[in-house]
Length: 249
Ligand code: NAD
Image (cartoon, rainbow, N blue to C red; front, side, top):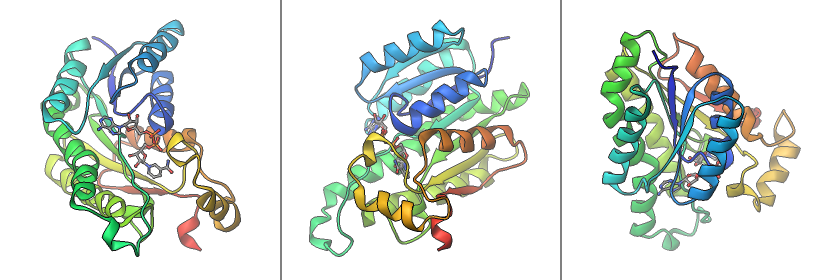
């Protein structure tokens, strides 16, 4: 029987890249994905295979439903199983919360498609493979990458925060609906040092000065939280706030 398989969306940069490395190191065969960076995906596959791991890369636009379905089918077909789905891909839009006029219907729709509809549709497409993982004694779980902005009234913009709050509720409702076969959890990071946040200097200063841990997260910190949720066979429906304690202050 082949080793356990994990699909990580948005895994050629930032948090997804760290999750892919972590799960490959933990012994999973990994299905890597991004919207466009095929060259980075191929290089990452070569890197993981060079150290004895198993990896493939699939390009897909998660705003497109046929691409979502193709991605999950490719993942399931490669090694004949799928044990873990990490819904990491997401988009953000920085808009001052008071600038209501800047928040167009287009922005709402685009963020909602990628941050809420896509994770749900990927779970729907992966459901039977994940149930099969449960039957084989595999981890059979979904980990969604949400945000502290989905828990508190904070974050890059109101639409971003609202989509992450919706993803948290999807997480809880799927945890109830798919139990006991499939566990569904989320990690809700605060600020993480990734390409997305490279120029967020005010947020970086806030985390250095106010967060009890006195720093933003590194992608590896979030990957560790993901690995913990995958390994913890009794946890489901959890939204694991991973913000260095900022929201306590
Ligand atoms: P990133 O920009 O490095 O990664 C985002 C990934 O999403 C990319 O790989 C990109 O290809 C993919 N993606 C975006 N739109 C897509 C689409 N239409 N189709 C397919 N893939 C698409 O950013 P990151 O900081 O690593 O973010 C990863 C996740 O973590 C996101 O869901 C983000 O909202 C969340 N998050 C990040 C932070 C942070 O501070 N960096 C904080 C909280 C939550």
